[in-house]
Length: 294
Ligand code: NAD
Figure 1: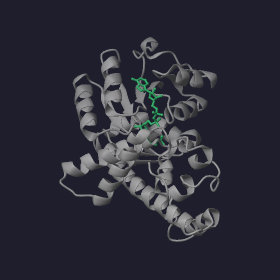
Figure 2: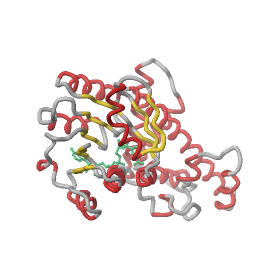
Figure 3: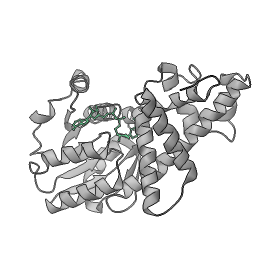
Figure 4: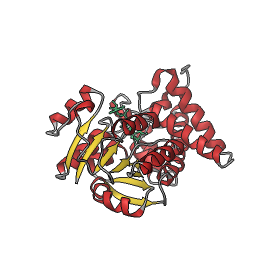
């Protein structure tokens, strides 16, 4: 199977490395020269986007920030790929764009499988991502070896677009949970509790959750958490804000009011737009501490 991957960012780079290390025939590219060099340094082939030959690709994998980026890549390669090529989009984007790209792909005799992920760069590096998949069964089966290499859990939800629907619901939970954990630690700090002892308590009690153990917002409590590394993402606040807005759009499309999800969308959007978009989303914790005026 020959794979061409677009996007070598926080997620795309460890995904490409995992596929490359597993012996997949992979060419990967990014508009950023630094990102291409990082994959090249790992031994992979990483030409600039304009030099990539997609004509023999079985799969065009995208791991890009937003729908507009995925749409731009699809538009740039759609006429050059062979009939039957599968577009595998692992980015988190809006259901509407996915539907439009699916229509354009189908009219050209191509497949589109949407397979957004959970698990962060750690999961991409370890091959333990969780995939939420939408697409035709036979197209999904064709790209399954890639999903099995990159992930430890693959859940299919039906036709193209349903993967993004599942992801919107999932990340709404992660955003709301994040606010709960960060606010809990801010209160613990204000009350004079030791953060490490409080973390150990919560990890082994009813408050236990993924956010607590992977995105603990207090520096030097959890090794490897973004907070212990200057809040370097991890999962950038701008992407969390984007995902929560996608969840709000999905809720609006079915006339459902999700008030906690709306508050989370507002808080993370405000935080990202205040110049914090490239920090890990757990950095929002700092705005909850007494005396912070950001
Ligand atoms: P990122 O911003 O770190 O990386 C995106 C990369 O895409 C960048 O290197 C950028 O230069 C590149 N790019 C943009 N336009 C391009 C184009 N036209 N052609 C080639 N490359 C292009 O983002 P990320 O954290 O890797 O996230 C990617 C997607 O995965 C997003 O939709 C995000 O919501 C989702 N996601 C991220 C995480 C996480 O923990 N970071 C977890 C799950 C899902």
